[in-house]
Image (tube, rainbow, N blue to C red; front, top):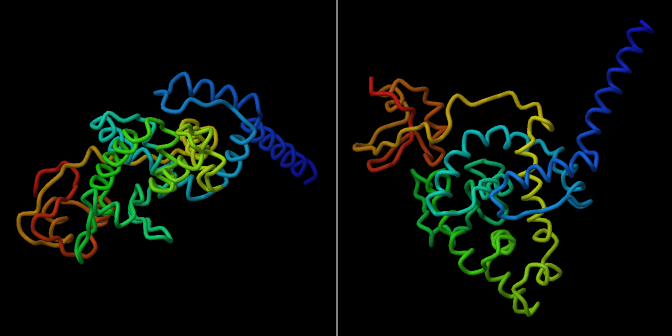
Length: 282
């Protein structure tokens, strides 16, 4: 028993040593440099003690690990929409920070969806809801609206750090801070930002790092059978139900609910856009 206990302790020490290596300053610095070399250059950054502190803080969060594991499903959709609007591919990491990739996420202040739109902004971007459909929860509608909104923010600020800060803090608030700082330079505005917004860009970069090196920091073997862009879009010609649609296309009704979080009830109204796997009707 003593030998078994000794072996167990040695194994635990080895595992702890291996885990600590991934938080070693030189290890992180080299990984950041490699990531920058393969990045689209949206926000180049370097290793810093703050980056390491946030990394250690975020890697412990359970919802973030779950979000990273589901990112393979949503990223092709994000990448397709970002390319459509000629936006940096790195913006695909933003909804992880915003919603944890929960399409039905609703914040304490009322923002909802993958990209977390406030009702006033969402309505302006063409989102909306009724008792059957909530487009704030629709991955496609929410993502397309986010891309158009981010496109507008970049035209206003021409600085991705300011764009991200505005996304978190609000355009009106950022404009007030620009006026107060007497500058449109992020470095000059930074001291006037609230703590949450100061941490927003660093957290965004850490999430990018964790997604890039997820196999180092997480046990991430689970893969989705589909990615969102594998799905076919259909328009409902006559009112139906999730159960009837599932039977018609030989699908699991749970999958239809998962792929279409915008559906609020079992009823699917005429004219609704629905996403299903690419199978012919049975």
